[in-house]
Image (cartoon, rainbow, N blue to C red; front, side, top):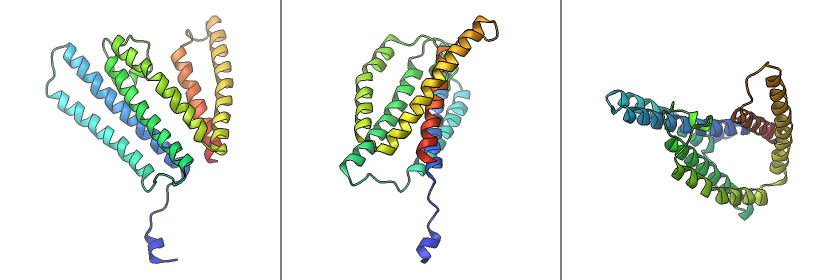
Length: 214
């Protein structure tokens, strides 16, 4: 073993890398939500005083922490040399960036009092018609990126994706029908479509990650 090999930092495991990317993205959206929510609430009351400096400073630190996590996960990674793999990587980066932009727009477009953070992603509160139109206008682009992903992802990646999708389908069936029946029996509150959606997304992501990196 050479001296260079001994001093080279250990490579991040695939599971840790994907968790770092997801965690960094969540921190980034959360930081933007905090800043936007506080700004809207402050302007609604006509006051944007010295406390804003502290809020923006904390939000900035959280945002930098998210960017640091993502940078660390992607450090040393370069675009592949083969055209198919390179397009796959570009599509993944584009989808991450688009998701971040859409999340930020949704925070800006929320009408009324905002609690900041991820509240705009977990509520049925009204949003600005302009922002809603912009978000809907990006759907064709999102659909095209998904199509290109399916065209460029390798067999192992698609098998993991399909495995997570099957788990998510079963999760939707059991969660939605179980919650609905429990609500009818006065055991649980009325079913929440948003809560079910995010639970299904968590199951899908967990199934994909487990099959992809186990």
